[in-house]
Length: 130
Image (tube, rainbow, N blue to C red):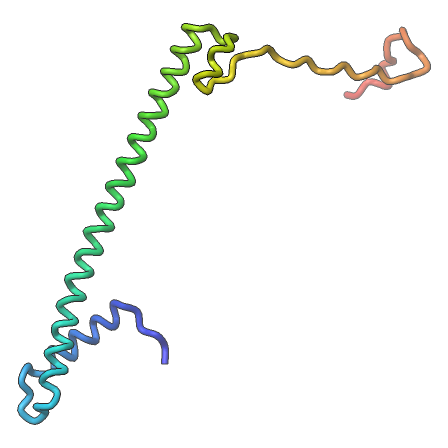
């Protein structure tokens, strides 16, 4: 038998409750069980409504978090630029604020020229790539 999902189970509860009267005359021993299932069904309906409300609240909170984070990033960038403008981009004082000062670009190491037998001569046109 396949497992039922929650929606199917709730639907089966509802069908059973609708089909079985509250006080079945020929099955009085089922009256308490029907009342118990009715209470559980009502509780499940309430829980699903709460869950939906919480999901919506969570989404709204997530959107607000993203908005505040983006605004915070912009403000922090503005402050960093202001500090760099005030102290200069190369000032070591920027380290106090968590900003790496500009210390110049490192130079590339020169690679030794390939050793060929004809140094000083321009390369022949046949050896040049097209």
